[in-house]
Image (cartoon, rainbow, N blue to C red; front, side, top):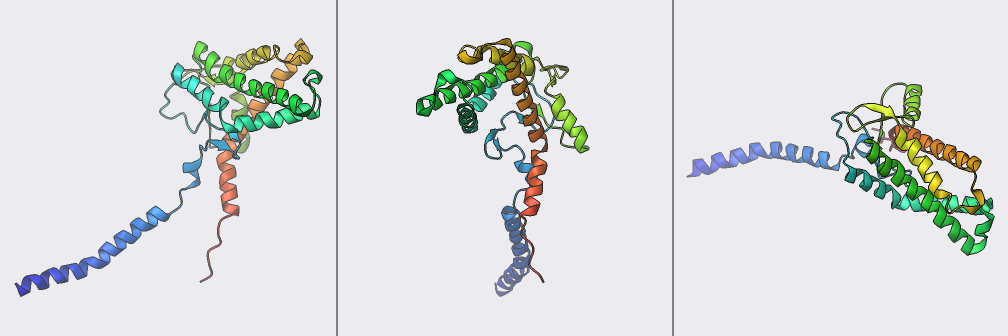
Length: 239
C-alpha cells in the first residue's frame, strides 16, 4: 500500500510541470489577439461605409441565390451607415441649395434626407438584387488581395465594368451600370428641380464613380488596418 501511494505521488510530481506548461500554452493562445486578417471583413469600413458585399477570395466560389441577393441589398439599405451617409449628403444638398423647391430649415432638411436615403436604398436594391437576379450576375466585390498596388487598383476599378456571373464566368457589369441607371431614372420622380437628361447623366456618372471609389477602399482596407495596427502597436519593454 505504501509503495503504491509513493508511486502515485511520484507520478503526480513529475506530471505537474507538464500540465502547467500545457495550461500556460493554452492560456497564451486564448489571450493572443486575433491577427488583422481575421478581421478583414468588418461590417463597416471606417465605422460608417457598409461592407456587406465584400468577399475576400474567389476560391471555392459559390453563387448567391435570389433570396441571398435581396438579403444582401436589405443589409446595405438598412445599415446604420447608410443612414449616416444619407444624412451627410442631405446636409451637402441643403447647403448648396441643390433643390430649391425643398426649401430650407428643418422641414427642408427632412426633405433632403428622405430623398437622399431613397437614392441609397433604391440603388442598393437595383444593383445588388433586382438586376443581378434578372441577369444572373454576382453583385459582390471579390478582393484580389495580392500583387502590386497599381495592379490591384486597376482590378478594383475594373470590377465596376466587368463582373462575375452566377455560373462562374465573366460578363459586362450590367448590374452596376444598368442598376444605377434604373435608380437614377426612378429618382426623377422625386427630384422636380433636376428633371433633365443632362442631370440624369451627371448623377449616373457620380454614382458609378462613388462605387468605384468604394471598390478601391474595399480592396486596400486590410492593408490600411495593418498599417494602423503597426503604428499603434505597443513597444516591448526594454530588458
